[in-house]
Image 1 (tube, rainbow, N blue to C red):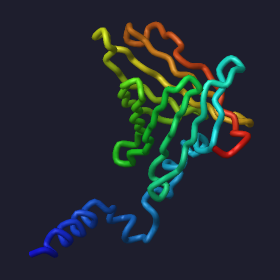
Image 2 (cartoon, rainbow, N blue to C red):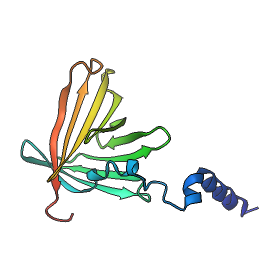
Image 3 (cartoon, one colour):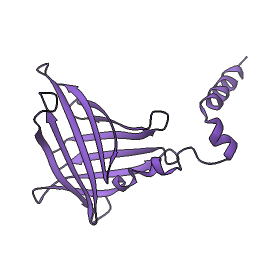
Image 4 (spheres, helix red, strand yellow):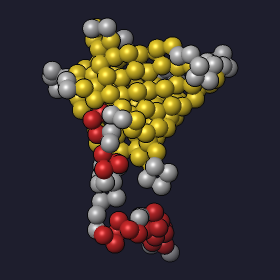
Length: 171
C-alpha cells in the first residue's frame, strides 16, 4: 500500500506530460514561442534616470519553460516573478509578488519586438488599477516601462521607466 502513493504521483506526471512532445522526444518548451522572452534573462543592474535602483537576476528554469525573476532594490524592497508561455492559450503570463505585499498577475504577448503584459491589481484603498509592463530588448540591455491606469487604460501614469544593463560583477 505504501507504493500506491508513488504510483499515483508517477501517473499524474504522465497525465500532465504533452503526448505530442513525448512522442517526438522533444522538450515541451523548445519552440520559438517559448523563447520569445529569453531576452529578459540575465544578471542585470537596473537604472532609472541614470541612477542605480536595484539588481535583477532573471534565470531560465524548468527545462526552458519558465523565467524566474529575482528583484532586489537598493532601498531594500524585493520581488519575484514567474513568467511562462501558455501554449494552449498562446499567451504569456507573469505572476509578480513583492516584499511590499503586492500580488500582480499579468498576461500578454509579443507586439512587434516588445513583450507587453497587462493585469489588474486592487490597491489598498480599494481602487482597481490596470497595470501594464512593456519590455523592449536593446543592444545594451532591456528597457522596461511599468505604468498603471485607474480609468481602464484611457490615461496612464508611469510607475517605473528603467533600463536593465548587464551587471558589472557577479552577486
